Length: 285
Image 1 (cartoon, rainbow, N blue to C red):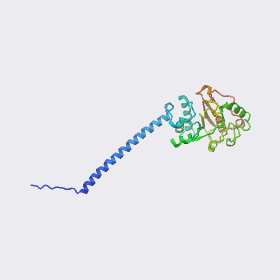
Image 2 (cartoon, one colour):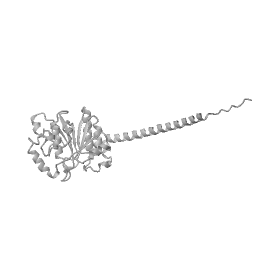
Image 3 (cartoon, rainbow, N blue to C red):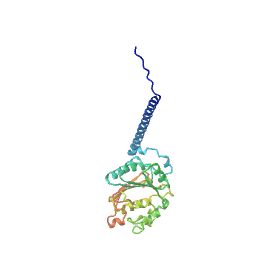
Image 4 (cartoon, rainbow, N blue to C red):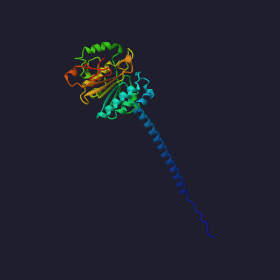
């Protein structure tokens, strides 16, 4: 009869085996957790990106809570959003470096930033601290607040004053930082005046009541920036949202040429213009 041998495991071996099993279970748990988290992040990011790249879906996205203080009460239509986003995308694709200046920090801001992937996008808004709060929520956004001195109730007087000084203080080509024209914005960040803008979108400030800032000074400043640009493309595309308050929803598209001769240095507009676009520049009215 063969004798039965009893094999006894040393206690330390048993502990090592138990510890090894525990470590494997933790390793499996950690791998599963991070895999699940990565998958959910990928799905969320993809969904957001699709919404940003689709103007129709972006138009229906609910505004984040930090937009509650914005004074831009008129939303763009899906057609207007599609028109502007197409222009931004074309600028980003055509230019080696597209510079986009946006007056008004609206819920389309992230869309413009994403589309202008190879250029610089700067947002200017009349609401104090809105830009800094927006930057905190969305790193990579460059936004500043602007203090406007004009009022809608003063529109006629301001325009008449500017028209009377077209060849002096309110000329099309000038250094806005030191301008004495009442319609000129000279309190913007210094680099705004130094950059050559390929596209300017005017969707602010508010202008639907007498005490509002109105967009006279913004339109004037945009044209001077385009006329006075030193480099980049020969023309700047200027979009003005709700440029006719009696027909809310109208989007103006103007092409402003850089001053290349004496005439363009002393004139804002050519004689030939159309209702929604211009071959030369935007008008002050």
